[in-house]
Image 1: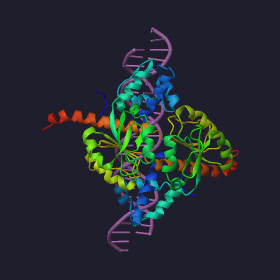
Image 2 (image 1 turned 90 degrees about the vertical axis):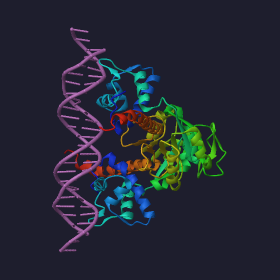
Image 3 (image 1 turned 45 degrees about the vertical axis):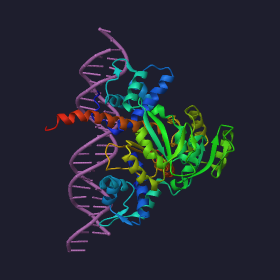
Image 4 (image 1 turned 180 degrees about the vertical axis):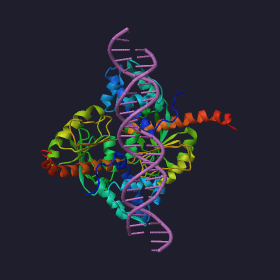
Length: 228
Length: 228
DNA sequence: TAGATTGTTAATCGATTAACAATC
DNA sequence: TAGATTGTTAATCGATTAACAATC
């Protein structure tokens, strides 16, 4: 189908961003764009854009550029966003409840079709179109509706067992918000996306501390380098 | 202080993960570990761990390994987690409310000290220890409490203006959950962490689609390659 | 001292950027 | 046709891994 032999992870991670920017261009009424213009907008190099896209095929036209809406749907197809992967959400705590209603799953190729929690208090709670079910109903649900994605909003302690169970129930992908690091070496062809909000916040903190230190250190240097 | 000349972003992004794993080792009562053992646990190479750590200094001891709790606090210090960066959360919708109570900010070197929303309906709502304030109170609040981090849980449309305002009010770091891509070229030494949950979900979708395609393609090949 | 494991240098690998021929 | 911009190859840059001397 495509020359998609082995596309590097770095490239894949950039595709959603291209997809977003192309969407914005469409809503601005832009129908055609060159790699140079897009690069400028996105703060990357034109070379990188062309190189990335050509992992999947030649979507542009020499001397002209790229057709925005065409390119966007090509990328959407590559990402598998045109599909309708059924997903279950495990854990209806604060974060789980927020994720159940905050995201437009259809936009990302998914469809949330079940929410589960082990807590008596939460079972039966209505969240958008869905109702929280007990964990005991999970196996039966999976057999019936064959979800492929599990969104994990559970405590670290519960994660290993729940992962194991979900994998055995046929889950093909984990979107993991628990503080547990899923690796699942035993089961192959399972996709894992460990989100780790805490790691992201720590990286932010590093940046702040770094800037503060740099500033402290640069003040005396500035005097010293006045005419250097 | 350290040989922290210019540490690459890849290294920084791995530090939180080291920090987490070392925390787990501590709670398991492990007091000493070699780069080889840690590497095995974390599914990385020992070389990488040693290389990463030596960007900041020699924390180990030849012939022995690393003292777990010592190494952990060193990394914590590098990340700036031992500090207490005041943070404001902008946007108290589903995701904002969840983030306000779901995370233990103190663990990540932060302290949530204010929540703001433009909606009349949400202003006055109690979230944990805090109460949602109107956006009109933001400027005064920043002058008084000097927050350095802004957590953005606002719609894409509102983001550019709010970012601008926050930057002018002295915010040094953005933890951005809006679907807008902050770049802020004009203002330097501002740290930005664009989370983009949608991008993460799209990357997951790609993985699923990829696996499906690989499987489809491998079935006939397997027959063809039976004795090759 | 012998064994182990670090810190660090050198080799490899991969990803990004630059250059340019192909072509619309 | 001339101008523009792609697709693609080659050059550069950076990050990861391997190797080993230093040293606890």
